[in-house]
Length: 493
Ligand SMILES: *Cc1c(COP(=O)(O)O)cnc(C)c1O
Image 1 (tube, rainbow, N blue to C red):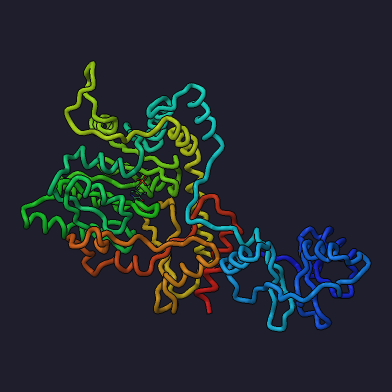
Image 2 (image 1 turned 90 degrees about the vertical axis):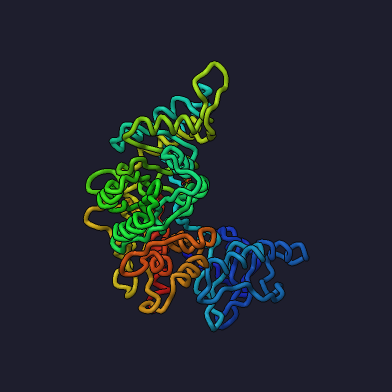
């Protein structure tokens, strides 16, 4: 529910003179009076317009409000939602609605500004320097893809990660696609991929005509289960058909257990692409997340921890991989006097303007990580003790960026499902989401082979019960409190 205004100052009776009503309207600036009867119950509302029509109809300013006709007021009752208030306000073209109790007494007046404030899951958060880098691009007319901001963004990004090479691209998806191309993934090849992830992790497998095999999560990190990965390799060995690559995803700001995953993959001589689109700024055993795969990719989509509105990065210790990524991303043009092409290329480079946004954003990354962790801690503390609510765990080897604050809601212990909570929050203009629907459950990947964790599928349970709460680094304490209040309202009875 929204913040409300004290109704006392705008409550009037029919004995009030029109001139005094005008004066009250003028003083309170709300454009609204509450006309109550002898019992104090709301009889009707009086607006500027009502008074104007009264005077134009010939009433004198010394007359009383007895001159006004009756008119049923638009009101809200307890249990109202922001969505209901918003609809009523639009329907009647008004900005305030009295909240009345069963006896018709007004307890508060709901203000449109408080009603309309939407809290988003993860909205862009600009710093102070993005514009300078963009202005620079305009001033020097470097509007094209490529240019000094791109070169600087790549080197600053690589340096921040402690990696030698990085290629700035048009999206995280493009980065993944290039990584698979570079590893030679083609038609009919197998690629192992985390199941609990966004579709963008797996789609590039299909772009290449390859066959995805999905790997479950472990409960302790929600990321790829090393045990399930071992099972998948055992199957591949038995089949005599090894995967061409493994895509290991770091979800919701937390690294996978990369030492174990890398050692399994090394043993089988299969390269790893680390999808760190969601884990920029996180750490694994004191090293930055996204520095473990043979290639790693990042995303700067609008909802990620830092954003260029759209963009991605491919990093690697192998200079040949990154050189190849830049080559393929610029239409695979051979070095020749004319336009010469020996392989199929893509238009996947980042523009110099967006790289300017990225440079500004990158400076803010440590701040953004702290803010997101603070949002998570706030929820965890304020919602502690609600039976059946559990928070995404953080293993001792992990320092999550808490890109999203994610919890599970046990439907038995809570008596409410995740969908119930999401719907209740939506009615209050708070954006919450289900946890990723695992890829092995997606219609588009139906029939794909799936290796669950040995004790049973973890990702199925996380999908059923998981909820992502608003997590933006630009959230105010009041907004976090609003989310907390609504979650408590649904889950605490
Ligand atoms: C966002 C995301 C991507 C894709 O990045 P884009 O820049 O949006 O193309 C890939 N994988 C994961 C896990 C993501 O969350």
